[in-house]
Image (cartoon, rainbow, N blue to C red; front, side, top):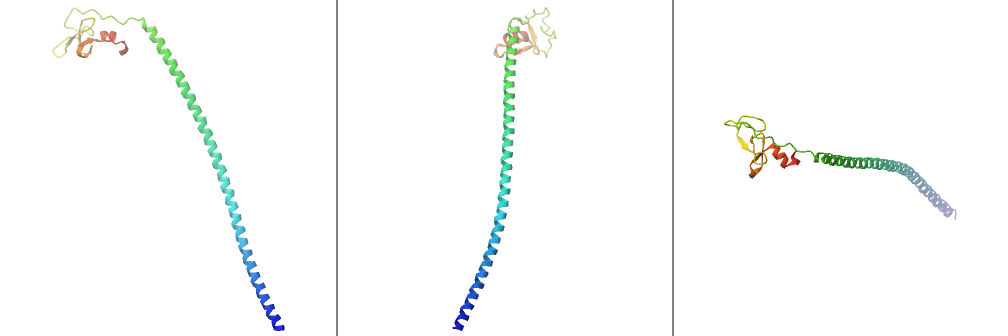
Length: 166
């Protein structure tokens, strides 16, 4: 029986020693896991801080973008108003000039060797054209406009015929 007790005591000591070893290993593992948990919490706090900063920056950018868009819309509105003012002013000026007579073509000069407008001599290289419109005067190339198949006419007759060209 004493051997049996000694054997049981040895077995109990061995089991106690193994339990202590396991307990120490578990404590070390728990310390390592607590350290990882602490690092994970710190990382989580950094990520949360970075997320808040990014959200704040995004809100600031959105506010800036909204303000810029409002300024652009105001500028567009102002430009439209200015365009309407200019159109009204143009219409008013057009109505004022509606009654103004355009210059009447001057009579044909007595000297058929001179241009009716600039009084330039017709020579071998300066061609003369008969105005095919109102005045029937003789004009040089510079003082006439090409009317296509209708020939050429003096600038004054052309302006009377095409008032938008002035």
